[in-house]
Length: 411
Image (cartoon, rainbow, N blue to C red):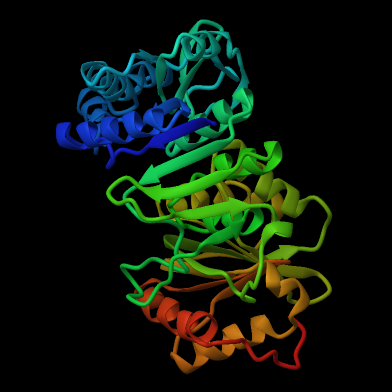
């Protein structure tokens, strides 16, 4: 087989770990497989580089930040290649651009546009293991980075471009769990999860896989497995929906901290008011998540939305600048909050799941501030200090129970 293996920061976090990774790559080669390796920066290197830049200037230039951050992966790639060579495994480290990864011309959060696989294929044909720096590429001759978690995306993109038989994502956990085992001790590792469920969980706060990597894996049909680099146990396969068997109604529970709510009270009912508010937020780079509109009377509505806590003051300022133009009454804000979500493709055919979620939170004395739903998820915004109680209550209600008893209410 042709196997792409990606190793995260904890997996290459020390020289001892790099030696262990090299041993695993050598074993895979010894089994007769061709291997392409993608690596993240060692441990907390990226955070340390960000701190270094912050110690020099308040607002680092975006182009120079990419130049700086791209060095982290080069260190781990070169060290791993050195170790493989010492084990008798021909290897060569490659930067993103040397591996042919071209991105859109955006600094800090670029998307992969295409991959010229000629360099990778040439090395594989020679029996050499390419060790590629994740998280980066090139656009118009400039180094670009793919955003946090971008090494996952690099690995999936390379696997898709090469038509690899398997893409293994090695991390510090043994796979995808029903929820964070640090919060719920009885969390269960999943043998398999669908692309759609994994994408929802990744977008809702689960940090096992980067959302863009899952999206690309689904689009290109890349066989994806999440495994631990610290053990030899089986991991979790991310597969198409039609490959799932014996599934629960709810597959997993995700949560996200540092959520804040902004309420715009008394927004006049006219067709451009909401467009003005959310266009202004988007233009200034504020990412809005949950949006709820409630009708006050025939002339006005109240609009609430959530943002990351770090964007709260910025969002309030942007909306306040529109008050004279729109004519709303006032702005209210609330933090700290959190968002807890249940995810499962089985929810589509099982009415009453949302009702059961609300009952579980009520019984745990967790108030709900906002709700949003899709076909396979329900998310509730709750007080931040109650997030662990909420996750534990939902895990008991949906995962630890042998089966969900559908309620009579529609979801």
